[in-house]
Length: 319
Image 1 (cartoon, one colour):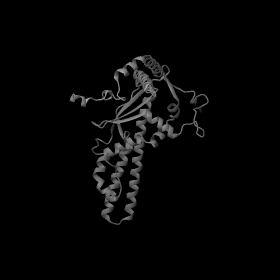
Image 2 (cartoon, rainbow, N blue to C red):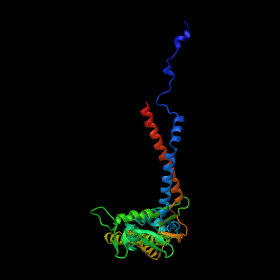
Image 3 (cartoon, rainbow, N blue to C red):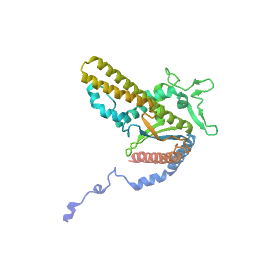
Image 4 (cartoon, rainbow, N blue to C red):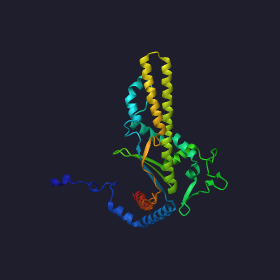
């Protein structure tokens, strides 16, 4: 008897596992289903081209800004730094540093309260919500007749039962936020404000209006705060009989009055315009070539998925 006979393995030990993937079979399955893959790729490619051509051009206007408080040597920031300790003793706030004021101004620019007030002041609801195309020959914005009837000045958009066809402040705010972009450079602190719109003229105009209204808004808020500080200090003078404290309060009132005078004559209160917005001559979007490429890739992937799923089901049936 041969000793090697004790080590013979059964034939099934050499068989491949049933769940092992055979790349050759997958390749053959893909080759057999090549017409499905080609057909799906062509359909998606044609759909991508059609969709890309239907999208209107958009234009981006942008302006570069610098904080008005960054380089002040004797203005509001310097006064706040000089008398901040005295003000804290009196329980008032003369204003933070340039970083805080910039952050507050940028937060204001993107706030719902400011943007809704901006939209209502300049009557931007119709071009914001009903714009469809820009006519370059006449430089006019064409409205979507299914959303707004310009002749009868009536909103026609379809809404859910119980809602008004007139866009709400919340809807206007969300739509405007999609057009507005604000970025701050980490290197030099410069702020870029941009508007992307169907009309290049409107995009430039809205950027100019935004900067103007932001400066006016922050200026008004600062003036109101300064007046409240002066009123508070005047009330504290009447309530104390200590001459030293009265002297401190009078000194603070003097500085707050200077702040008030400086703020009233400062037009670019929050931001100075370094590079103003211009009417863009080149479109910012849509990226039609990218849309077509993505649609083609999706079609090819879907076609391959269909072929592989059919191959998997047919393999199970054979097993």
